[in-house]
Image 1 (spheres, rainbow, N blue to C red):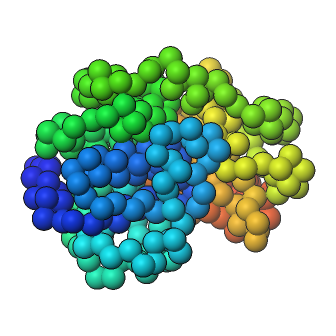
Image 2: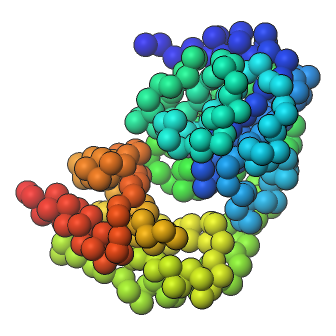
Length: 325
Ligand SMILES: [Mn+2]
C-alpha cells in the first residue's frame, strides 16, 4: 500500500486537543518524536499533552520541551479528541495506564518498526525509515507546518540517536535532506551533538568498565556480549539511559557480527538488546524466538532469569546461526 500523509493531516486538522504517547523506557526517538510532534501541533493551535509511562532519561532532559512530558496520572482529566502513538511497534510497548487514557478516541499510529501490528485507526508505518522522528519531520514538510528551533532540535535528536549518528544503513538520502531542513530551522549541530554524545555522567563510564570486565567473545569472534547484574545497577546508582551506547562499543569490534547486551531487571526478568552488522544474520528473527522483536539489525527480547541461564539460552541461538554455514 502506498504510504500517504493525507489521512493523518486530515484527521489532525479536524482535531482540537490531542494526546501524544510513545513507548515505555523512552529513547531519543521516543522522546524526540513525541515532543517534536507535540510542539508542531501546538504551533497549529491545538491543545496538546505528551505522555510517557517512564521518566525522560537524564541524558535527554536538555531537549527543549522535554519537561512537558507527563506521567499518565497527570493527564487523567485531559479531554482529547485524538490520540497519536509514536515509535511504538505494538500495544504492549506502551503501559496499560497510558491506554486507559484513550477513552475511545481515534488513534493514529506513527512508527518505523517492521514488526508494527497496525493497531491504530490510521496507521503510518514506514519500516524503511530509520526513525519515527524522520517520519514526523516528513509529515511537517508535507503539511507545510512551520518548524521552530525547538521542534527541529527534538526531531534532529530523534533521527541522530536512532541512526547511531547517521551511521546505520537505514540512513538514506531522504534522511540527510530532512535533516538539512532541521538544521536550516535552527539546530545548533555542534551544541546538540555535544549534549547528546559528549556529556556523560561518570557512572556511564563506570558501568562500562564493570561490564567490559565480563565481556564474552564467542563464535570465533563473531559474537560479543556483556551483561549487567542488578547488583551493579544498584551499586553504581544507575539511571535510565546510563547503559546506552555500551552495545555499540562491543558491536564496533572488527570481527563482531552480532552484539548482545543482557540486563537483569528488578523482579528477575532479563532484558536483551541485540545488534547485527549483517542482514544475513538478523537479530529480529533471533529475538522473535524468545517472544521479542524489532528490526533486522536491532532488536530486543525479555527472557526469564537467572541472568546466566538467559545469557546461555540466547547466545546458543546466536552462535548456532552464526556458525550454521
Ligand atoms: Mn525509533
